[in-house]
Image (cartoon, rainbow, N blue to C red; front, side):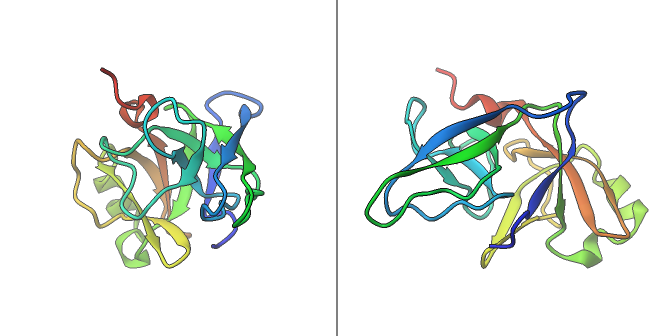
Length: 165
């Protein structure tokens, strides 16, 4: 885990983001600040987990937000994690998986509004900026900084709402 893989870029006109405490199951992988969080299973489940590689997509369980704290769960006991609650107005920043794909403004501009995913290589989250646009992908590119190879993105409403029956 690289503390702060994902950080707040813009708060959507707010002075601060709302946070909420969620349960994390015993023996679940620890969640660290700056890691994206989803519901563990179906809607209505009380526990959360961090994203897997290649998420979020429209088949992913509901996106909650990004961890503010380290989860307190252990192998034997359930715990909690505080999460920044997000909506599509909150802009997040995260490094591109490959700096060569996001080191010019032209490269970043060419991907504006593309829907792509996050990558989890080892223990570090990054934006899979080389991924092709797909309507089933859950983050939308809104900008970036070529000097830092950070990509700015929002979580799409479709992955924030979860499955709608």
